[in-house]
Length: 98
Image (cartoon, rainbow, N blue to C red):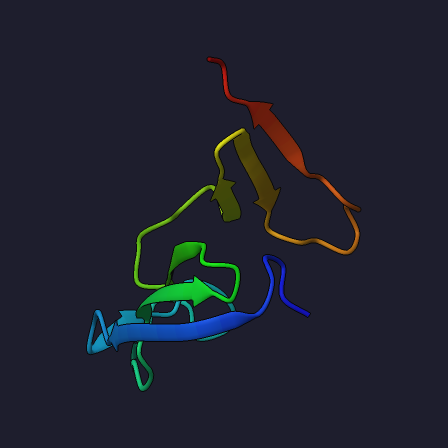
Protein backbone atom coordinates (compact mmCIF):
# COMPACT_ATOMS: atom_id res chain seq x y z
CA UNK A 1 0.00 0.00 0.00
CA UNK A 2 1.28 3.44 -0.93
CA UNK A 3 -0.07 6.47 0.90
CA UNK A 4 0.01 8.66 -2.21
CA UNK A 5 -0.33 6.06 -4.96
CA UNK A 6 2.10 3.88 -6.91
CA UNK A 7 5.64 5.19 -7.45
CA UNK A 8 6.89 5.31 -11.06
CA UNK A 9 10.50 6.41 -10.38
CA UNK A 10 12.68 6.96 -7.34
CA UNK A 11 16.19 8.22 -6.56
CA UNK A 12 18.04 8.58 -3.30
CA UNK A 13 21.23 9.26 -1.40
CA UNK A 14 22.35 8.25 2.06
CA UNK A 15 25.34 8.68 4.31
CA UNK A 16 26.67 7.82 7.74
CA UNK A 17 26.57 11.09 9.68
CA UNK A 18 28.91 10.01 12.49
CA UNK A 19 31.51 7.23 12.81
CA UNK A 20 30.42 6.60 16.40
CA UNK A 21 27.66 7.65 18.80
CA UNK A 22 27.17 7.67 22.55
CA UNK A 23 24.70 5.19 24.02
CA UNK A 24 22.13 7.30 25.87
CA UNK A 25 20.29 4.75 28.02
CA UNK A 26 20.45 1.27 29.49
CA UNK A 27 23.35 -0.49 31.19
CA UNK A 28 25.89 0.82 28.64
CA UNK A 29 24.76 4.44 29.03
CA UNK A 30 27.61 6.83 28.24
CA UNK A 31 29.70 4.34 26.24
CA UNK A 32 30.69 5.11 22.65
CA UNK A 33 29.67 2.61 19.96
CA UNK A 34 30.51 2.43 16.25
CA UNK A 35 27.81 3.44 13.77
CA UNK A 36 27.60 0.66 11.18
CA UNK A 37 24.72 1.86 8.97
CA UNK A 38 23.82 5.02 7.06
CA UNK A 39 21.88 7.37 9.33
CA UNK A 40 20.73 10.13 6.95
CA UNK A 41 18.67 9.28 3.84
CA UNK A 42 17.18 11.53 1.14
CA UNK A 43 14.69 10.27 -1.45
CA UNK A 44 12.86 11.78 -4.40
CA UNK A 45 9.82 10.17 -5.99
CA UNK A 46 7.69 10.57 -9.08
CA UNK A 47 4.29 8.95 -8.69
CA UNK A 48 2.37 7.36 -11.56
CA UNK A 49 -0.12 10.26 -11.43
CA UNK A 50 2.72 12.76 -12.16
CA UNK A 51 3.02 14.15 -8.63
CA UNK A 52 6.57 14.47 -7.32
CA UNK A 53 7.66 14.21 -3.70
CA UNK A 54 10.68 14.02 -1.47
CA UNK A 55 11.45 12.45 1.88
CA UNK A 56 14.25 12.93 4.40
CA UNK A 57 14.74 10.37 7.17
CA UNK A 58 17.50 10.75 9.73
CA UNK A 59 18.58 9.38 13.06
CA UNK A 60 21.75 11.46 12.81
CA UNK A 61 20.19 14.57 14.34
CA UNK A 62 20.27 15.67 17.96
CA UNK A 63 17.26 15.32 20.26
CA UNK A 64 14.35 16.00 17.91
CA UNK A 65 11.06 16.53 19.73
CA UNK A 66 8.92 15.91 16.67
CA UNK A 67 8.75 12.95 14.37
CA UNK A 68 6.07 13.26 11.76
CA UNK A 69 5.15 13.00 8.13
CA UNK A 70 3.97 16.23 6.49
CA UNK A 71 2.30 16.24 3.08
CA UNK A 72 1.91 19.62 1.40
CA UNK A 73 -0.75 19.93 -1.29
CA UNK A 74 -2.50 22.56 -3.35
CA UNK A 75 -5.34 22.79 -0.83
CA UNK A 76 -3.61 22.33 2.51
CA UNK A 77 -1.22 20.32 4.67
CA UNK A 78 -1.66 16.86 6.18
CA UNK A 79 0.41 16.13 9.32
CA UNK A 80 0.77 12.53 10.49
CA UNK A 81 2.75 12.20 13.75
CA UNK A 82 4.99 9.31 14.68
CA UNK A 83 2.66 6.31 14.93
CA UNK A 84 2.15 5.07 18.47
CA UNK A 85 -0.21 2.08 18.79
CA UNK A 86 -1.06 3.04 22.37
CA UNK A 87 -2.02 6.58 21.39
CA UNK A 88 -4.41 5.87 18.51
CA UNK A 89 -4.74 7.87 15.31
CA UNK A 90 -3.70 11.50 15.61
CA UNK A 91 -3.86 13.20 12.20
CA UNK A 92 -4.21 16.96 11.74
CA UNK A 93 -4.89 19.06 8.66
CA UNK A 94 -4.77 22.73 7.78
CA UNK A 95 -6.48 24.33 4.82
CA UNK A 96 -4.80 26.77 2.44
CA UNK A 97 -6.30 30.23 2.26
CA UNK A 98 -6.63 32.00 -1.05
